[in-house]
Length: 461
Image 1 (cartoon, one colour):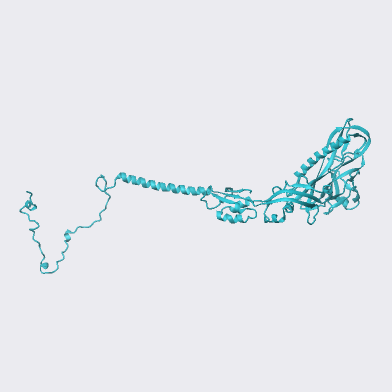
Image 2: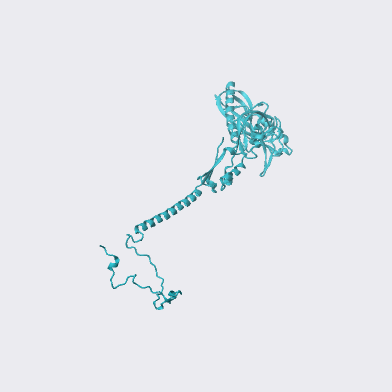
């Protein structure tokens, strides 16, 4: 049977049961135990030991981290740090790029007012209360063609053409009656074919600008010596009636066209019907030529309608040296009627609509295509600065002109909310409710400072 522990204890050794307890004497008598004095000889000096990490020699039950796991953890930490840096860099670069490449687009719809027109206007070349003012532009020219003809009996005709008269004498206009005599440098006399009013001069920063008017003249006598080519522009005409007075030097004229048709002798004879049709064709061709010149010369701020003109033609001149043909020449003058655009618009659509733009600029599409018909053509004479009555009809619009460059300058650098105040300041010409603004990219907070990155699209209704 198994042995008890006591059975294998050597007999010469005592067990803890056999060891007597030495009780100090004081304790036996109920006193305090004496405090033992340290054995100085046996004191062990205390040193601070340097603790070093144990060198791992295995990973089985030793309590040391696995090198593979440590390496994996280091790799994971490095990946996290790198990813954070990359994300931060991309975010910063994206933000910088969004600022650099940011754009703003504003779609602006201008205020548009429909203004149908159906009215009659009365205009005058002088300042007349309640009348629209007009001014004239004068153009002269000539045309000719060859037609069959026969040599007739002796005949005589007077030369005719156009002379431009100038007024440097007075700011006031000067009326000259039909038949007023003009003398050339050589002493030949010509007469006005109709009554005219020569405008007065105007003062500019460069000095006096003479008033001028093209007038039709006819030679006082028949004969080829009265024929003067337009190229002889240095030739001067003076008004005979003013000789000896202060007006004589202040009024003068120069040829504005060929003065031709003067003849005395055996004249070419052209069939009357042929002459009439030839003259009509020359008038049509010459009118178209002069009208094109007048339209091309309309100054800025003025308008001239296709029917706003009057023409005047000298009698057709027939000449030639061959036995079976003749030359038919025609000289004519076109007086264009011009209106100041701003004054005309107020007259046609009313001051209330114009004033709604609060002095901001506007345009009037459709104005030039209105129907314009002179209703008193027989009484109206531009050369005499007569009163013009015309019927005007059609559709026109008033559209605010958007100051694109100014808006870009004012919108640059503002937040989208702040741009509203800028646009509202232009509410007289901008339809705020139909206009909009957009920033790109969408997270941008303000309009770019660079005006080249701001687009303003003007979109008519």
